[in-house]
Image 1 (tube, rainbow, N blue to C red):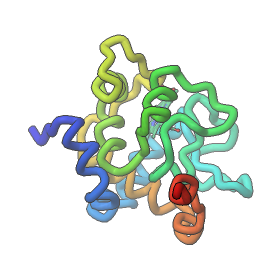
Image 2: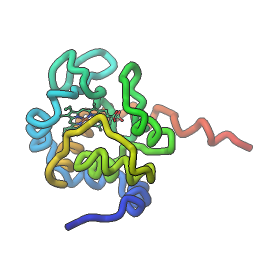
Image 3: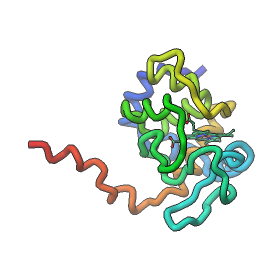
Image 4: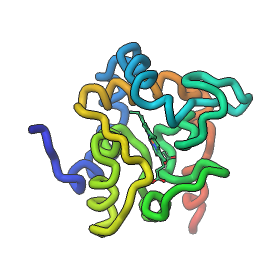
Length: 161
Ligand code: HEC
């Protein structure tokens, strides 16, 4: 019902970053993560502490600090080519694209890349938007607050004069 086009979503992602994270319920997201995501993913920080899920689960990439990160760049994880291409084309996991991705990873990649043969290696789908938003709020609650601004990723291109 609430389907927006992905083009609109990507445009909105800029201005609405963090809206979904604010609206979501991280506690509900924690239990949804446990039942729906942790068979394939965990959340492990740089120090190696497992913040969610179980150690040594590597079917899917580590979801630590995934919000705001380019798609497909966790080191050592063998992504499918489509997700890597989407990341290289500029896909960043803000709330809006991740909400869409979680509900239909392959459909999302096909739309984003404009390629009907794009494939997702994640076949799982979250059934409703509310659950997706809650899980995103949960993942956001585990993200490194202070480092987020200090990463300096944006400065690379800023110095062009
Ligand atoms: C059956 C295993 C499986 C389940 C269950 C699963 N995933 Fe995934 N997930 C994967 C795989 C495999 C990939 C890599 C996809 C690719 O390369 O196309 C992935 C990729 C992702 C990515 C992209 C990460 C990046 O670094 O770009 C996100 C975000 C994600 N999953 C979130 C979730 C969440 C949240 C859940 C629970 C609702 C979930 N996944 C459930 C296997 C799974």
